[in-house]
Image 1 (spheres, rainbow, N blue to C red):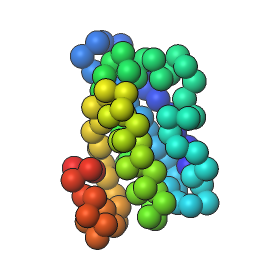
Image 2: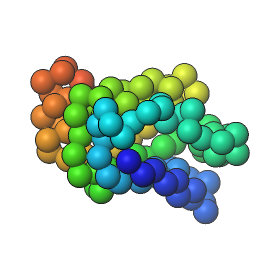
Image 3: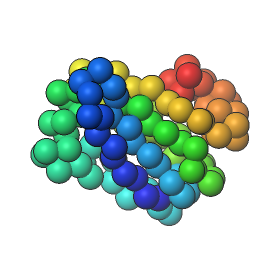
Image 4: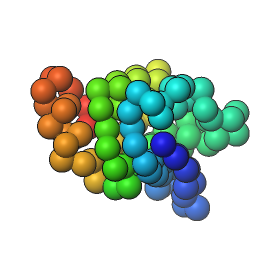
Length: 105
């Protein structure tokens, strides 16, 4: 899994997190917030909005879904609103089976 941040140049836009690759138990070793350096974390919390773009995710399993749920939990604790863009259908189906679809909507 690769993740990259795109910080908006204007204050009204959300910080964009582009996730690419596979979201599964093999590729996910740490939660997202622990991967951020202090400057990145501060930029996200100052902005207050994080858009997670999943358009380049090839495959995801329950570990990937749990990773995304944990990302949302950490964002809420940091008073950051999270939205998702281009959620793969298979990930939405997995979320629905797990009663977590509202998190990705």
